[in-house]
Amino acid sequence: MTSRRGTLVEDGARELLRLHGYAVDVIPPGFNKKYPPAHLVATLPTGETRFIRIRKMSHLPSTADIIKAKCGLDLAQFRKHLARHAHEPGFHYEIWIYSLTHGFRCFEVLRDSIREIPKLSLHGSVVSQSRGVA
Image 1 (spheres, rainbow, N blue to C red):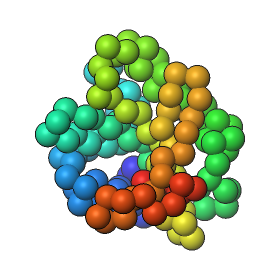
Image 2: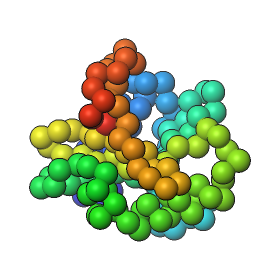
Image 3: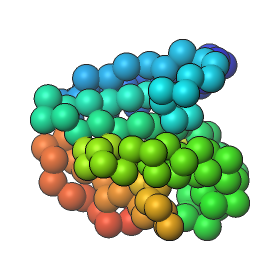
């Protein structure tokens, strides 16, 4: 993300991940076959790795159907990477949608579907099953 607002959104995502114990790396712009189309790679000491693509959508509701319609290329690239690394049980592929009114709503990309990730509080308990992890 290169715009001023995009940088602030990315910084907010990094801070949220750090609050939950993740080490966060920013993927530089450009194509790298080693990584899927992620903006951030978040890793826990246990080995769990989250590849996160951040999108801003202010005028559309964040639903799985909207993700399928608006992020088709990202989904295809994530699924291609997922197929090549199926033996890696700790890899998670996520699209985080940011809007000014709702903050982050997060969706995990699975082989055949997309699921919304429940939003966590700062203490790690589930707050709502209808909102993304933040």
